[in-house]
Length: 534
Image (cartoon, rainbow, N blue to C red):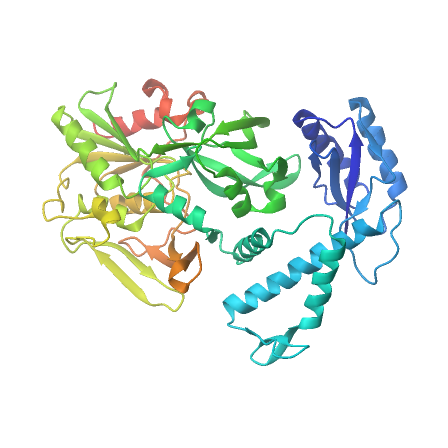
């Protein structure tokens, strides 16, 4: 398969990009393509892959016939550039310049070499032996790369590469690509700046647009796309003010003026492009479901610094004796905010509660353990975890005093244990209830604490560990899935989810609202949860 990039006259804006992405897949599939088309108004280009023996002249005629009604036309030659090569390099054809060929080849070779060097050095403990000309990069004595190859590549880059190579960015991209290629959906490499931002976020301090997301896919026009799905939009966040909703699927992101599809660069890289410092803009395109169809919309949202609100509460409009507590996520602020919310509602005369964990993506294990301690007795099993070697650990309810001040909000005192063990309550879940929120739900089920209403949860029963790379003498951090975890019943819900006691799909009228501003009278899941306590 070779990748072709054509310059397109008349391609100037995002709307035209979308038109090309809708029209061209069927055209290029007729010539053996997989149908994945990328259009970029910034460079006025369109790209896709076709078999090496595809008749380009006929293909170009078919494309021009399809896009002519849109006022666009391929510019060729020299619009065609081959981006992948196999076999012995040959003189460029169809107007391909030798310098373009060399630059493309160098990029591919350089990335391969740097990846190999990085993986060898960081992961397998390889060494670089340059004591003599022809020194080798070796693993346990077996040659992987010789110095001459690196010297040749370096010379070619310095002599022929049109662009100035940023070694730091190149290495950062390689590490991220390596981590993303592990197959661990939740693995992520953080630069030092990203690691600090992630740590602040877990402590309830954020910079960004104010969303929680999951790695997902979208079936659209007969094709499957990788997307970033929004499962939570924080109240009073830039994202909420911009009109974003849970369920929106980010399909492209812009970085330094260039638009990338999530399928093209992967979830981790795209997520990093969404993130950023306060005052900067996040630019992206979403697909939003409207009935049975999906509609695209482009956003430019200014990032802000803000304190997160992990718990909201109010007295029910339907029944003044019911307190509604929405747990948005389980960060280090959640236990204190949860306790304040429940105590506040008790003081207002509420004696029944609805705990809403819809769209809750989970969070920190210490946070959920502290919250569950309010409902359980001393020594009750909260969660057990198991590593890849089968080693098990068991977390039970107990008094906890964290030495790390950042975790002070997750301390558990003697008075906290069982504080709410006599509450009457229900729990509302949906397909975006994940991870720690599922552990909350499973504990309610296993200890028969309340009734679960809504739809089956997401199904994430694996635990991630965060490693500070500074401990190893390098900046940044690494997140890896290190253990599977199990609720008190011992039954894993990973890739399965937790089925509610009472299944209730959110009605069509309610689905048109952001969950955080959904009128109570339209929220049939909430109404059902309230009725279960009457």
